[in-house]
Length: 202
Image (tube, rainbow, N blue to C red; front, side, top):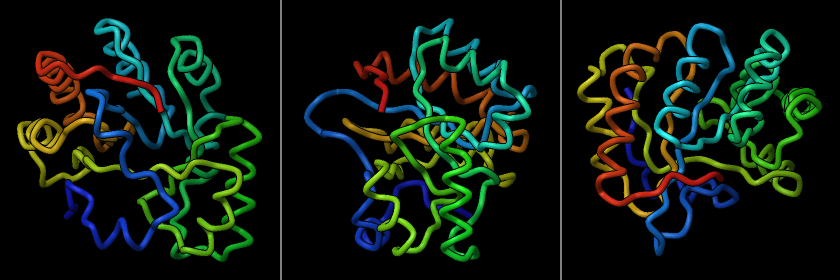
């Protein structure tokens, strides 16, 4: 189960984080977590290139090591990257020293100014320690693409219904999400473009 729209309580608990950009302009921010992987990321990059859309990829360091050519293509295609830890660690279950070292390992590879905690779960102390070096980026629209109980149609509906000016939208470039991403991503881009939104980089 997931919550599509980030609740106020959660945003209050993590005041260090960015949950959306300015609501004044009709810009929205498409993000992908967990890659790069050969089974999914190249397809996403092809779609984004075809539709002339830029996105931000929050990369897992060990996937960057395994797939350097795909990571290089993300950069070459003009997308932004963020740090998503070296091994996709859940901060709540990880001692602070180990968590921060894991983030630093990933940073050696991606050299990013953005950080997103895997699962959206980190302790307040972890985020406080990271805030001076990164913009901590959460979201206000979680498509639920990773949820096996979510249909392709519901994933698309989630992405469309809750998006507004400044929204940060989360998809995933991992295998369990691919079915929903294949269906929802191009349709979402098409529909939101028709609504007058522009896709911008974080």
